[in-house]
Every structure is written in structure tokens, then in C-alpha cells.
Length: 361
Image (cartoon, rainbow, N blue to C red; front, side, top):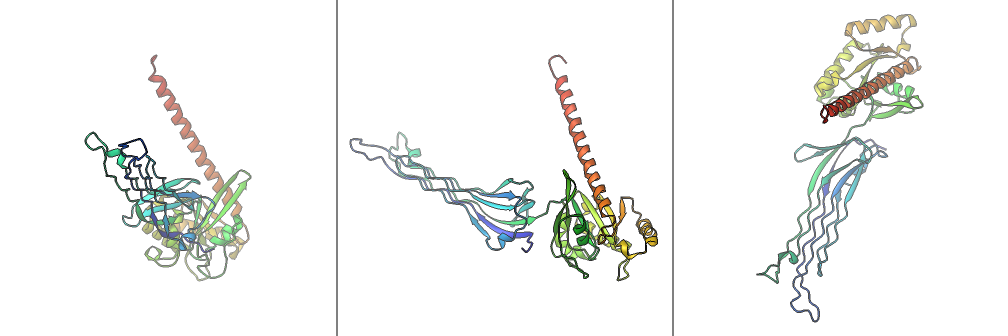
């Protein structure tokens, strides 16, 4: 299935039903009076996040979605039936924006989460509402209001814990194959990865994290060069970035300059990405002699002035990759523990505050 992470759709909520002009006419009941019922409300359009979907490809075939119109009111004070809602299933992680105003309407980040994107019209009032002491036979009813019609842009941002960054052929796809069950295409030419790939790294039976591999970045990506800039939004949700670098590029490139180039593109795309935890993974160590690896790695780290954690691995030989996974899991465990401590501390403060405000304080 082709990966699609953007789509434009048109949603049309149902119109409200019209109110009814009707009079009660029964034998032996003269001057029965008005009995026109109200129109039913139009159906509403909802977006619902579904974890079983992972692409927006379905919206390539259907772009217009309509909710049902409300039924018109009827005699004998019978109101019309409300129109059925239209529920559109989208992948978890979908951001919804208005095409007309370019504002973000909502962000669906949890399975089953719903977002109302078009409100149905209200039903019109029947003539029973317009009777009075001076107008006992009103021939007036109101029409139903129109439902909302909106042009929406759907943008999918994958939900992953770890994002992989790097130049083409840095070994990102090989790394994700080594640590998870994901099977992205691997080849000896650049831009092998044409769409993001997700993999689940299971450290223990009850401990795992999700890693995302995006197409390689090149210099000038923020200005439209290459493929990766189209998918950088997928790493904007991640909590940790792994920056993969080829220790011994076959083209004679400088690993330090490659790191600087990607940092420059990140700053142009979203400066907040540079403040996110980012670890350096020096890959393809198998291309160097064992006695040269440590010296080459230290030289790269020293030239970069790198202070965050760094690793030397060979993804194709599965050397050092498991150590990276264990360190990543420890990082997330520490974040979880800090969050639990913060919640407990806030709870203690709240309880102490409640006690101090009591009658015995």
C-alpha cells in the first residue's frame, strides 16, 4: 500500500428539516388549531481516530463526505427525524486543518477520539409555535438552517517515541531492521526509503518503544531538495532523536559536515527540534579496522563538541545496536519515573492545601 500522509477532503453536514404548516382537522372538533411539527436536525460530520489505520490513502478515492438531511416536520405535532451523523475514520496522529483559514482545528492522538468538523443544521419550527391570542391560525413556519460545509486538510504525523535522522545511506533502514521486526527496503543507493517506516522495539515482555525511520535528508532539504523534508513532521512528535552518521562514507564525505548540515536543516524546518534530546549513533563501524574505530569515533565527537550520549555500532552486523536500545529504554523509564514523582508531588501539595483550608486550620 502506498503511504499517503496528506489529503484534502470536503465535508458537508446535513441541512435541518423544514417546519410544517398544518391544522388539526377531525370530525366533531371545529377550530382544531395549528399542529405543524418541527423539522429534524441535520446530521453532523465527525472524524474518529482508528488505530487500525496507518495511512490516508482511502481519501485518494473519496474526497466528499455528507451527513444526512433532517426530515421535515409533519402534522399532528410530529417532529421530523434527525439526520444520521457521518463518521469518518482516520489514523491516530491525524492533524485537521481548515483549508480556507489555515488554522488547526484539532489533533487526533488517541484511539476512539472524536472531533466534530461540521455541525448539522437546526430543524425549522412548525406553525404550532406561532399561535397566539390574536393569531389562532398561523400559516407560518421556518425553514431548517443549512449544515456547515468545510474544506479540510488532513495531515498524518506518525506517533513514535524515537525518530531516526541522517543522510541517505547512513544506515537508518538497516538499523530499524536490526532492532525491530520492521522490514524497510535496503539497498546500496541513496533514497531507498521513500516513505516513513515504523518499528516496535521490544526490550522486555512489558517494555517496548516505537521507532520511526524517515527518508534521508540532504543539504537544502528545508528548501525542497530531496525527500526527507516532506516527512520531517513525523519526527516532531518524538521524544528522542537518534542521529545516524556513516563513520566512513564511500564518497569521501566528512561525517562532521553531514551532522552540521542536518542540524542546519532542522533549524530551518523547526528550531524546537534542535532542543529535543538527540543522540549520536556512529554507524558502519564494520568498514573500519577494529583498532581504528575508537580513535575515529572520538575524533568525530571531539570535532562536533558533542556532549550528549553517543554510540559506535554496525547495524548490518548487529554490533552495538542492542546497547542503544537498552539505553533508550532506560531513558524512557527515567522520564516515566520523573512524571510519576511530579504527579505524586502535586497530589501531596493539593492534599496539604485542602487540609489547611478546613475549619480546624
